Length: 457
Image (cartoon, rainbow, N blue to C red; front, top):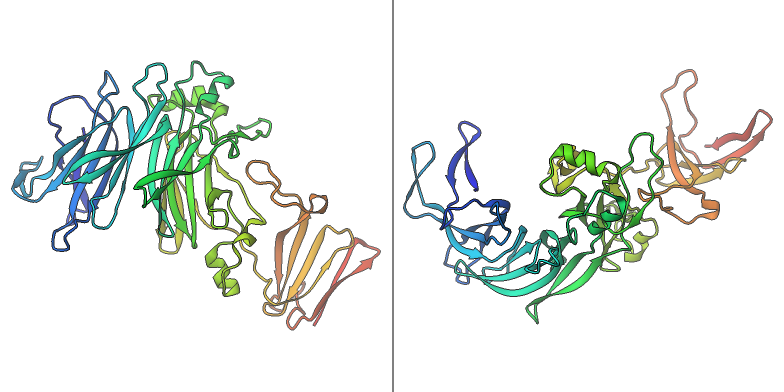
């Protein structure tokens, strides 16, 4: 069942409040829970709070309906510690037809109670167990009415999000069926194309907007002593999706795993081993209106540095396929704490892992007055007037997390930041003479093949 806890401000901890009660007592294994409030059509009517719960199975079969619970603030309920509190709490409102349900999402539409989308990982045809659906229900008065059934294959998650006033629904299609064995060939059952749907207000329906298909690639986690893995098609074993915004950009974190849901941590580590895929982070490309690799420049950075937003396509020049070793990833969250942005993954093999969502930036390239390459053409030096410093760049090939070349440069030798040398306080051996720099050059030297660097100020 589902246990609800209440926060005690004085004690600064949670205490049991009440259990969600179904009409007929049965074993029900909850797979997800969603809290939301609906906005009534009348401005004088109060908002209504709901809890929707999906159930994957009851111990014997997967044809178990999910449930919608409605908050009741009338009456009195007895808490689990024997004390009494005002309100009946969350009370069963209606069933939600489902089959091996894994997740749900809620859309809010002004003047209505919104839509509820339920991901069913299995269908009714025993010969095709993975052919399920994402059922979209219209809500009214605590009841649900089927509006649309979206095709899905082993749907593991469904999320709702809005980009520039357009409403989307993303479906994580995980697998066609359970693998027959643990061979690499059987892992292809997890190679399913997840889907991005766009709400069409005129038709009152979702339409397919993008397939996250074979053009999106995965790569295995690298075990110690192994050869570098090679990328392969599809986002294998898509298990969870999490949309988030950061620095003016919109992203979609994709949790990936090839362990079956009932497997323990030990079984997962033993069976999946080196076949566990890394998880992906995708970015919304405004020019193409699609999700793809990470782009080079964020809108916030454009505004900070240039004072304006660059042309949409200019950010595509240098893209990066990000893949993160997260083990048996299940779900993502994105948190902002003070000045820190954290991408958090819930991994059933690595625990809860936090990543600092911050990208490297080069300091010292403001008001550049000169640049020069060394005589071996391995490094480039740039000097700036605004900051008394020399920025050192090196020419080398760089690949992203899939092993794909990030840029196309002559001889695959692109410029990359190496270090910055700044004007130091006077001392023996300290760098000086950079203040007021107006030019920079490299001169030949019999003792150094790359030459000597001269800054004129």
